[in-house]
Length: 435
Ligand SMILES: [Zn+2]
Ligand SMILES: [Zn+2]
Image (cartoon, rainbow, N blue to C red; front, top):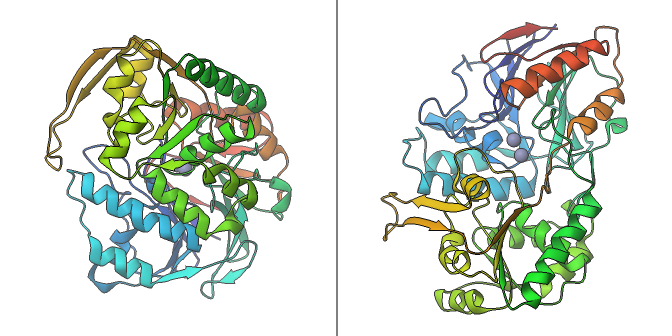
């Protein structure tokens, strides 16, 4: 018997945190992330006195951001992850604390404590955590270093997919459900359960053709991209399709790109990665930004939804230039400046972060071209179904918990699975299920 309690990521994307309890009351956590809303950013509170450890699927802060909370007052549960993910969360969580106005109840001391208690676990190595818990990591294909976790507790096998992709990208291979042994239950992400992504090859082709057209006419293409994986992926796409003009990389993506160099085993093709990044200009100083701004070429930079970051250094110049373009390459959440720009053609930005020296307040109608390319690193509806159809269950109950998606996506995905004979639900925050 095992008790699964959902502390977050229920009918929403954010604060992924799942608690599993064994017969004798020992507990284990799968992910411990944050969400970006003013109230309740951390996972729902729970009694963690018998916590035996926590395992992390990947670096994104909606999965990792609250981990330091588990290390308050010198507490020391083992954190199971890999070297790449640990290096990245060290930077991402510190960055989150630095730029946030929200008073997170932990700081650098807890991050250090967390790092000291990290246990690096290779892929497919079964690890005994305590008398009750065993864990095994499987590739998830979402970003470099991402894993799905198989948790064995009191004879039950629970698969937690984390974020995963069923299509390969230039950076990583796809997740393969056939790798996973027989299970009793699965906790599955549902981000794009109601959407289908366009065919990847065609999309890459269209993106590069559009970039070439702009730069051949003397324009500059600004590619706002997430620091983790998407910035590097965009550069690899340009390289794979033999784009020959200048490519600049700015923002946090530079640091992540360097970390990837240290973990070549986490990449699908380390040689291709090195080749693609070799000719990229890492923008290091303000002076160089003015060079990039005036260059015919591509500037890949954070933030992916234009909420801040180095993109702001370029955006006014690009917006005012009818020969240039802004190509968004990641999902744009409603209410973000990126989404607004895409929907209305106007870029609105209000900067009142006290951490910054100068305040930005921008409201510009785009003269440049604006477009969106859906380079997702999540499985789409078809991918999610194929993945589920290829899992094998040890008994007839086929228990499925749909998380990490909005209300519509999680509940509709759960009912689609019910129609196919799964015993599936979209849990609500705080609910406990016994399997
Ligand atoms: Zn993710
Ligand atoms: Zn996520």
